[in-house]
Image (cartoon, rainbow, N blue to C red; front, side, top):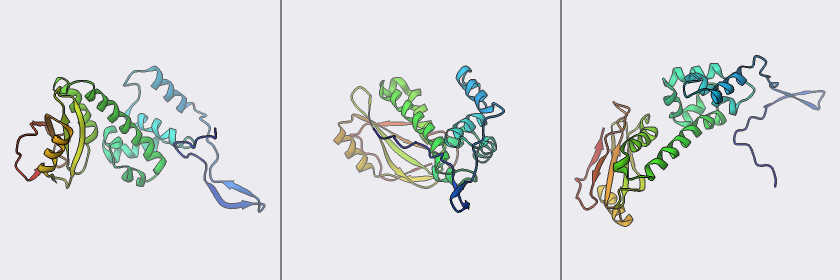
Length: 230
């Protein structure tokens, strides 16, 4: 089979300058890990516990996967300074990340994939047990996906007769303090899915970073039309 393209493009960039009209000049030569810094980071990650690496070292190690030929420590520290925390960096908008000085599409993808993986792991836990019996797992899942959003987002979790999750549906996204939804469409979707209950969730980007406490509602109820306010 032909070789698959790499997930991250770490190929060296070629300068337009040409030596002897034939040999292109590579813009940067490979930097060997002479000090053993990268090796030590990997060993600490694999051999230590959850706190083996500092936040900037976690970001640095992730960035190394996309750019193996550059010192990533200054970039990791600048990202932490801008976004405030490890969670803030990983939850940042991909476009905003890619436009940060020293970043690009490959490095933004290297960070974004962590949040994607964490969200899917948390969602799997929610799907494996009745929501009411695994409330903390639900809160963890929603926090990973919503805690650091800069706009209000409304989603509906549809449940079956065993209180198992049928569908997690994003129904509205708005401004920093408001997102409009259409209750009639929410109820119609619940009936189409055969859901017996639903949980309406929205976040508060204008205040607390935590998602609002989920509210369970029967799909046969008649909610008041309007918008969800933060």
